Image (cartoon, rainbow, N blue to C red; front, side, top):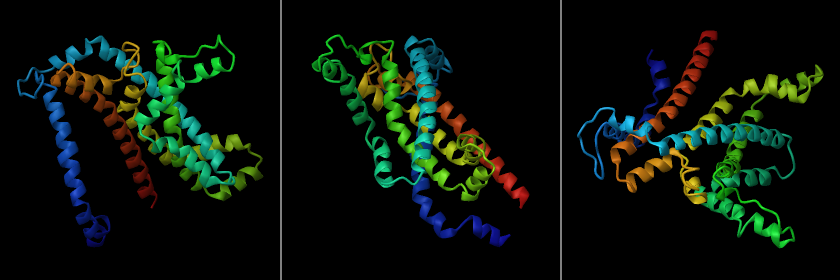
Length: 298
């Protein structure tokens, strides 16, 4: 029992992580707790403790700006996460072919993720600007009737955000899934080739199911990035045209800083926290069940 306890709790490691634990508890846990607490108050410019129950949540879900933000983030999240996972896996398969200059290609694919979201948004804003970007370039080449300005159209601006999100997030997904691919035993590939299984079928039926951990890590990372998307929206569209590309993070910041309604802003922030907690709980449950099965086999 004592040896098992020492194996689980290595004293120097525990002592070394105490500062990080204190910061995490003091900043994140306590901060989240106060945010949830203030969401039940009538706080305006400054936080107060005048509790009003669920009034802020009822007011929140009656606000059309919030409903538009929720619809936008669902669309943005589903499109960007699905495309990032698919493109990231395809890029990982490409990189797994032991190509020449692999380090160079890996750096190129990861470069967008290393950039600030503000820089990413500004770059794509310039590319899609009708007076500076693609439309202006094509018209200067002679195609005077060419028109491509998605950011100024309320029906297409959200698609521009999706494209920028894919460009920024597919590289890190590639890196995570590439690590998973490199962990697959080479004998599995040899056995599949001997059995005459097509490569695409090997990936879908054999390799991908073996990479559940890598897929889960990439998925959680993408979900967290989608929930807190703010910089990209502000840099590209500012939430416009109108409120066509407003996101919950933009709604919360504007509600607190511009409209000076801390209580409703904290209610919106709490609603943003819920999907993250659901995803983390689900991934933790899957990991716990997998560990239990491994322990049962031993």
